[in-house]
Length: 129
Image (cartoon, rainbow, N blue to C red; front, side, top):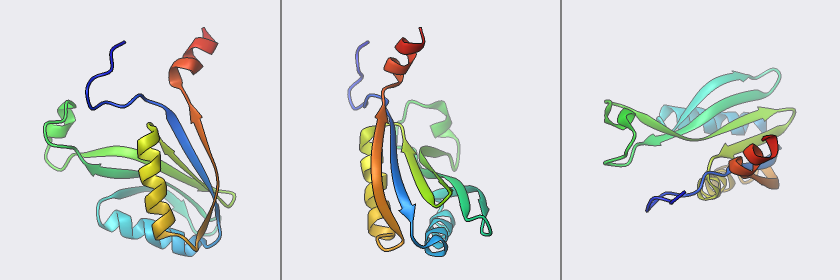
């Protein structure tokens, strides 16, 4: 399969962080939501859980028909906080690098990096065939 110019191979990319300060982390994601850069799907302060998605405007001329809808946003990644761990997911390595940079700069004393993982969806498919 030929890769289109400007397109990056899809790779399930994950980064894991230990949560050191849940309230600061939650405040960060609430502020991101106010700026329409993040959507909180669910959160529970008592159990210190949070699920949400990172959003951005579609680039001008994007191929997706949804990009032409007024106010449309593109999902660029997601997070899940559960059992004291923040799991950040993106579908390309470069997106994960960008999201990690944002998290590291914004939450440097509230989270602690643990590890990254990558899974090639084509390889996963081949193993199941």
